[in-house]
Structure formats: structure tokens, C-alpha cells
Length: 467
Image (cartoon, one colour):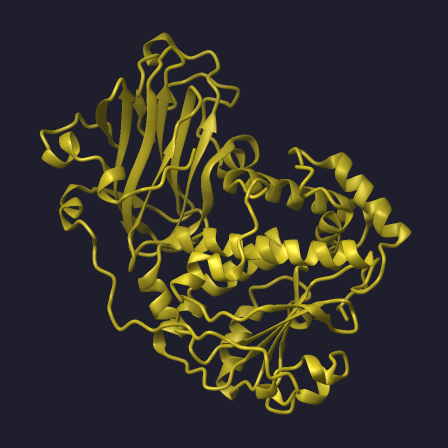
């Protein structure tokens, strides 16, 4: 089943070896785990992913604990442990028909206790997705999707006491390639999403993914992606031509396979994606005249630091709007106040990306991206985004006094420079009075600008505040 055998296979109860590894991983976690997520099977999925990539038990435990700790930070940032179950039909990405939708068969499994999910991709259009939704929203809604799938798998595991997952079968009949799709693949975006969801955050939850009725051209992007992916990719993502049915029937009852694929189940349906021929257009074009230009070299990042005074009853909100010329990593981190210099006590004080004017536990040198990832609280998602076609905007409430770091990173690129055009606001509210302050990266004084002084980005773009 795998390129390297795991201590527990799908359809089996957890072995003694797996339980021992799970216990060791729990002891090494660097971030608290919520009881809603803290099951042996959920932890084992991270162990299983590490078992394929590392040889010794020490390496397996350390890397599984590291990956799980990072996922727990993501869960806290997205409030996933408190998130109600959102079925596909209530997920905005399916409500807006930005992806084809079909149900996961809850009462049907293959011979390895894996739930079955059949989807048709003939309506899938990557360009329509890029024009129809912000990158940040796409990521968030896909996490909601995977959380729903996780709940279904957890239910199956609780019912049977055996390791489960979702076996995803994708019918590629009628799927057409276009230049945008090839760009989506060659730019690394597809491999990033695969890594983010199928390896980093939900390993072994959807396993395997089988593409059937494939055309010969699919092998071209497949080889591109395969070269960028971890060990076990070929077993996880399987390709079949029109002669696939015999392979499926070795592990799936013919009654569970849709009629369109040669099975006997006529109740399985797929709601196609809705295509749009319109390109996305800015909602408020005037904002584009007020953006600050940032140039970020390869292996570099730029940040803005906003300090919130502890001695205030005001509510504070950070809002932003930006566009990019390519993929950028963006996020907001929080650092509690520690031994601040007296001159930096002013509420809303911002410092540019060239001076570290606050004494913290880190050194006076520029902190690394890894330091932010591993030591600071994630206030807003820390993922790669592209705001070239569809611009980005959002807002968070600054619920704690301290330092908020807004980061634009190009550290993932070895060659290409990236350009970001951005406007950031710090909004203060007290006794029904609102004060809006523009935050600049280069520390310029605010200019007399009607947009900055009178218009709140949150209201302009109807932002839903993440608290």
C-alpha cells in the first residue's frame, strides 16, 4: 500500500508500536492540543507521514511532533477546534460553485475501511477560481472542507476502532488543459496546496487520490509536481487511464462505484462548477491610488510593527488591502510586551523594517522567519498568497496589548524579486468615536489624504473581523 510500510495500515486497529510512538509524540508537543482533536488516530496520521520519510524512531517522533505542533498553531489561528461542522453544501466554496461538489459516501467503504468520495473534474476551471475568490478565502474554506472530512473519518474510526481515511476517485473525463492551468502547475501553486493540505496539516486524511480516465497530457504536469513532492507521492496520487475499473473493484464493491464509472450506483451525483467569463475587477478603484509600494528581494522579507498600549480602553483593529505581482507569504504575528523602551510606549507606534526599536527576548538583529513561525502567536494565517488577479483584503482585532507584526515574505524565492502594493490602517474605537491611522512601512508622516482620513477599509470592503 505504501512505498514504506507503516506500523499501522488502513483498516487495522492501532498497533502497540503505533501507540508507543503516539505517546512519545504527545510528550514532545510544543503547543497545547485541544481535547476535541486529541485522539490517537489523529496523532497517528502525523506519525504515519513521518514513518514514510524517516528511519529511526527518534527521527519519526521528533518530526511528527514538530509537524503536529505546527498544525496545532494553525488550528488555533483558524479556531478549528471550536468550528461547528460545516458540510460541503454550507461551505462558501461550494455554495458559490467554485469547485465541483459531490457527497462523501458515509455508509460505504473500501476493503481498508476508507470512506469513498467520487468527483467529476470536467467542469473544473482554475482561472475561474482565481477570479472568483481571494487566495486567503480559498485557503480558509478548504480548511473548513478538510475539517468536515476529518469529522467523518473520526466518526468512522470511533465506530470501527480501525484506522480510516477518504479514498478520493476523480473522473478526469472531459477535463481540458489551458495555459492558465499549466501556469498554476509550473508556478508551484498546485504543489504548495498539495503540501499544505495533504502533508503538512491533514496527512493521510485523503489517501489515496486516484485520477481515472486521464488523458496523456496529464503526465506532463504530474511529472512536474512529483519532482517537488515528498516520499510516497506516487502511491498517494495514482493515475489510471480508461482501464481503471478492474483496479478499483479489487478493493471497492461494484455497488459503491457510480454508474458513470462502470459501477452499479446510480444515486451518486456531482454538482458541476459554475464557470465565469468575467475577470475580477477592484470593488473600490480609488484605493489603488493610495497604495504604498514595497520591493522585496529573493530570500528577504519586510515587516511593519504596530504596538498597542496596555493602558487603554479602546478597541483596535488592523486592516489591509494589497496586490502583488506574484506569490508572496503573508501573515500577522503577535508578541507580548517585554521591557519596552520608554519612547516606544505611544499607542499605535509603528517602526519600519530597518530598525528594531523594542527590547524583546530576541536579539537586536533582524529575527528570522523561523523565529516568527515557531515562537510567536499567529493572529492571521501565515500562508502563501497571490493577489495578482484578485486583490487581498482583511482585518483582525488586536485583542491584547503588545506588538503586532505584519509580514510580507519572499523568502521562498531564490531568484525573483516581488512587488507588493499595500495600504494598512490601525483603527481605534472608543465611545462610538473612530480614529483611523495609516501605517506606513517607510515611516512617512501621514499625508492629507481623503481616503486615509475618512474611509475605513473595514466598511469599504465589508470585512468580517477575526477576533
